[in-house]
Length: 206
Image 1: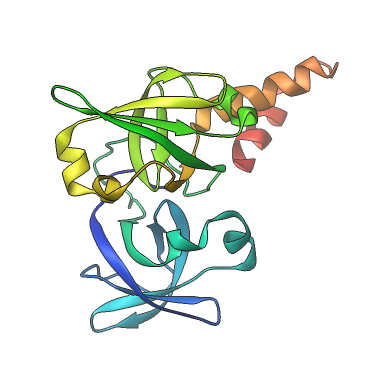
Image 2: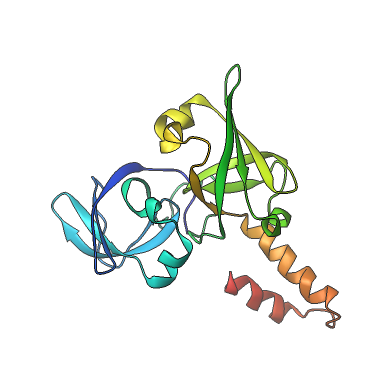
């Protein structure tokens, strides 16, 4: 589990045989989970100036290749007892969005992110969304896009400052929105009232 708060901007310096070599000040252990641009990956090697993670075929099928090279957002998985900030992030990319426009406001930036319309039910106004691993709040939702208002501090401390119209981004929708939608789909399909055991099983599947 992650929180969507970026701890460091690392650099992918090699990609060979499904293994990414990342230059970083983080000091994980073998088997640890690290979110790389919002993608949960497992540490498989340690280096004096970084670590290695494995990106499987399924990850590469979903995630744009540019999200696994160059500078990347990094967040280690939460540990028991860590302070909880941001929101609940799993490190699972639900869809790939595209920056449609970026507008400068008086004290913030407005980012309009286009997504497949099938993802809109999981994007809730004033709810949470993860963009390349960054926890953000949705301000407005449209038929095929959503609007984010991002403060200068977040833009400065992340790679969002480098984004332009056309930039592709990893999007993880809100866990609870997916949870509710999953239950409603089962109910609307004419299934009998769900038992608590079935709801628990759904929760574990997320």
